[in-house]
Amino acid sequence: MDFQHAARLGACLSKDYAPEMFRLLVNYRSLSASEAASRLNLHVQTAQTFLETLESLGILEKEESREKSRPYYRFSLKTDRITFELDLGDLGQKDDSAPDLRQRVRERKGAGARFVTARGGNAISSVTVWTGKGRSREERKLNLTEAQGVFLFHLPFPGAEPLSVAEVMRKAGLDGSGAPEILDIVERLEALGVIEMHE
Image 1: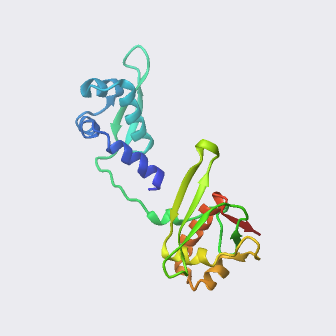
Image 2: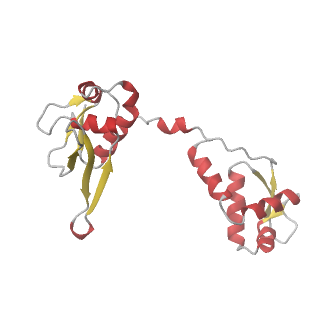
Image 3: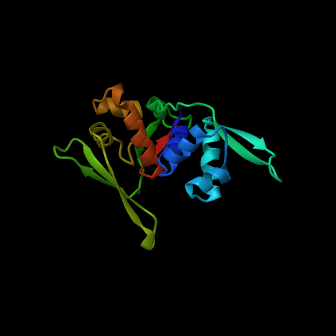
């Protein structure tokens, strides 16, 4: 189950009327949105959206019925058991546009970010960035992990020759185990205009 699928299922299960809706689905062979809404005192569209979502997630089966003057849908359970398994490892995968360890980086000139040095002086504890202009200007503070702080302490200055992420990690004494969190902060700071990347 991917994260988007799990989030949609979780949103359904979190509704205060979800237990009663599932009780109806267990007790009835099939159920229309209007029948569910009338029994649970819900708006028809609320019931319809709930049932349609469960159908799109593969939990319910939808069948067109022509018992009345115009066609409508009836829903029935495809399974009497819902398993919820989410592989969090999938969230660590980067797309092709994400930075990698070979990407050369340095601090962007005129970024206006504030790097706060940690106690001990050999790492950065946080980076503060200002976004927007005038009255809509907002301050955003990014607290760093220990590995990220050491990496950014060794990040080349704006006028210096850019180094690859791997080279900066070596200078900082970091091994490859921290690469995912380093790449994450590089990507976030690049998006905020604090870091620039070079091919």
